[in-house]
Amino acid sequence: MKFLLQRRGDVGASASPYRVVEQDRGEIAWVNRFLDMQRVRGLNEFSLRYYGHLLLHFIRWWAKQPGVDVMRLDAHAFTESTLIEYVRAQREELPKLSPETINSRSAMFSVV
Image (tube, rainbow, N blue to C red; front, top):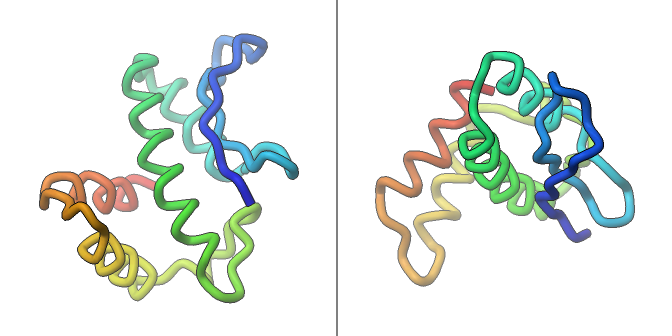
């Protein structure tokens, strides 16, 4: 699976122009609904792009976890342990990430 953040110009004014997609399967609806909600809330394009990149990083990691289908959000599959494992995986990345980067990525899920 190859996940991308695309900028699209053919979406309505209330939709985020930034869309998280899987190359062969299309848009990841639950992620893009969140980005659309942020657009309606009035976030600027820079912020939408930033959120899109944060979510893209998580999606790429989560897709590698056993039994997870990132194309649909299953509330039972996303637990507190998911977040802990995500933080743990980031701490293992090379080159080492700053605590600020890890916190920014992880804090996103208090919003989602």
